[in-house]
Length: 420
Image (cartoon, rainbow, N blue to C red; front, side, top):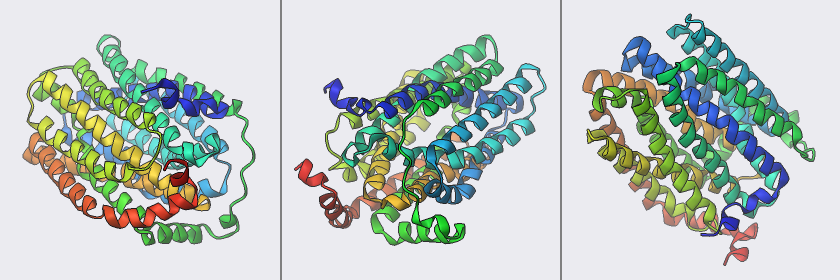
């Protein structure tokens, strides 16, 4: 495994400075995420309210992402990102002030979560579709997306660990404050870029609803995109709710504190980081299709086993498998979608990708919170993992059909000739 292969997309100046700025910012974002979940559970002792907070912070992504995708195809994506990062910074500072002054209430957290979810509904599709503008050549998309995931998971590894220590020593408010300051790094990196003005989309003069309808028709009329988005949705709704319930496992199952929570989340980050290094080291996107059901099955089996564990070292190891599986699934799906999609619909397909994986998560959070209250966290994760496993098996049976459709596209854009 050669470092030059893993990091070769960093030779693009714009992507390189974005990589550095975003890594710093995402570390703060993960610190805030851990601190917020611990704060909610400390204030309420309620798994159900953990689910409610997760639901309200993510449901705007489900509702607004399709419209945001139309905007990402029409507007300058770099300017969109500067706006969304500035608004996210303001949200973090407000959260910090309320917490540090001791006036924070659960309704504040819910309200600010809705605001951040609304901001993210525009930020994520714009950021995902902006990658192709930074790397220029499509054959480098797989490596760029893998490195994008790598910085996300490097932050996921570092952020929770720092947050766990700071929460125990100082409190949650400092984590929110650090997150607010960290947004300056990515804003500065965006301002420092040299990006050619993108071509105006032909959909710019059409009505927003027409653009939205066109995006849905394209996505669900094209079998590979439809299948990939469907599996992502099922994994998100039924499996990713484990993150919302993590404070319950940390405190009540493993008998730990905020440091335990940070260590558990960092373990998932180690697995995900390993996945991104593996993906970045690949020289071709060929073969990623079969990795989708394999990785989602690893995630599902890891989730079932984790739900039954009462030992910290076993739980940490299983979370590494969970993190590895879900990250390969996400990144492989993202890479294939961005490779086969028409350029003028990239923002809309990335918005549907966002809606499938992140936008459906609030439904899973709400469902998980309700089920955990009535049947317990262990049974909740077992059911979710089993359903993800069934969906993965069904997707695997469709691989020959998907291969027949996708390979001609790879030939047309030169990928198969470049990597025979």
